[in-house]
Length: 112
Length: 109
Image (tube, rainbow over the protein chains, first blue to last red):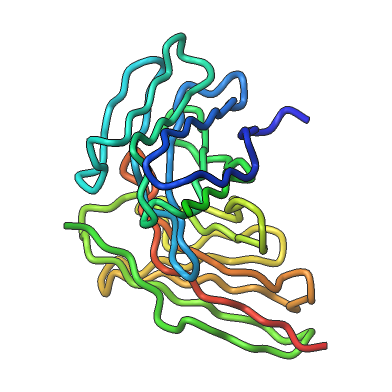
């Protein structure tokens, strides 16, 4: 399968711990996006990269969140000092330029 | 700021009927829109897109209509099937997609 893959699929962590998620995009896609989705809501944009450059970050993105795409291929999203409000599905997507985005299955984070 | 909204949070149709899902947007400068389908436990999946130089685009069993005058989009699904049951999102794309809250489509057999 050559779609977008995310790891892990599920993560349970204690409040205050740090977590890191990984996303492997479709190989020929130059753009990579991170979204967060809570139950009953649409995906909420967090940030996106074009190649290794982080082009945009949502104003809603707390400074506890950081994303990297060091070689313009896979990306990581780290959340420091997790809070219960961080519990959500974290979705990664990739696209070729501004064309339609292909989403991964997401990482479901539960902060207890 | 930009926003995208759907008219109805839920829609229930009989199998074989046509479905129409509506969406309104606020930014008159928006020039690219995408409809996504999200099934339970999965990420959103691209259905069809439309650019502002068009007012209609057709795919397999789906049609998207764009009315720039009233800033309105609709997704029409012909002969709706049980496998069409999902949450449908319209998204405004300005480099990244901005999603509304979705319409849950339920298809009754």
